[in-house]
Length: 349
Image (cartoon, rainbow, N blue to C red; front, side, top):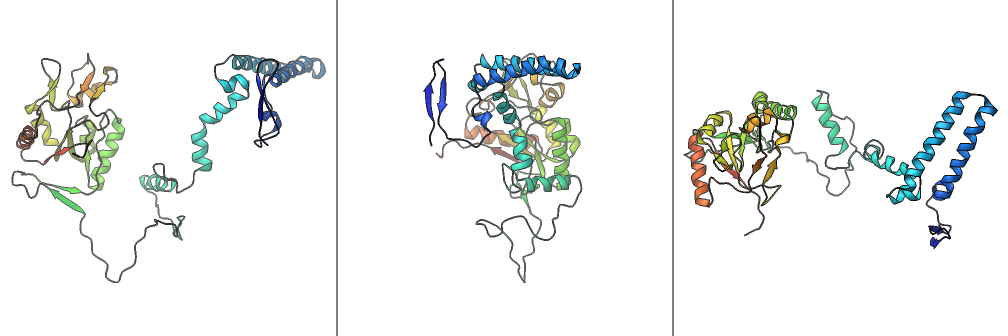
């Protein structure tokens, strides 16, 4: 049966009908009048508890509870939030449950194979391997092997022998004097400053152990990248962090000498052509977020006196021909290391 909403004599709207959401009656019928009735009952109980029971601690506790109930309820009645205003005190439970909703879902509701973005099963494997614990689960699987999209490897009498899964970058270019043997899977660009020092150190150390490369991100080469010992791909963005300085008009300009000095620490160079996350706008690093170590990695003056802006485009070149000349310059300054570009495609043409 559907509910009907009627306007009462006091001007408030009330729900009339017999439909139920399956909740206890006192919750479904809770309103300001019921809140006041319960409050009057608490006051009466707390007032009579001392003469009837004679326990001053119990009486004091009831008095404090009654006072707190009225204090919260009157606040709710005057609140701008409709749930608190219409369901004094009890409505606060909704916000409490909402605040712990992720934890409730993670620990009690989430399935082992739900992937947002990684399933609990996959996270468990990562945790175990990080601690050096065997992640092998014997005797079967929790996966639905009959579901569409399930992948497996068939047995073969003559399986193919796989060689080392790497590709040599720059091997066919006579101008590249230092080709790099790259893994097929590597760590993509995440800057120091966006990630903490421990995160960068862990990623770099893990890349060294795994034999794959670590892209520095636009934030340039930090001491934590170097301490981890990974093969580094130096991401050079529009602000030329680590290879540039402030020009006369306050704009960041490329510094060949500084680039040559820092290029010795990397295996490859990647020119970031555009701001993928902030197209046409560039990025802004507020001066309040710049620490001495971030300033060190990005070749910023310390203490910083201004925000650091990453423009939406490069000023070292402006045409495809000039970009190719810039690539050649970087290759020469780095003594023949591979130089590539990274770009985000906005329109197919």
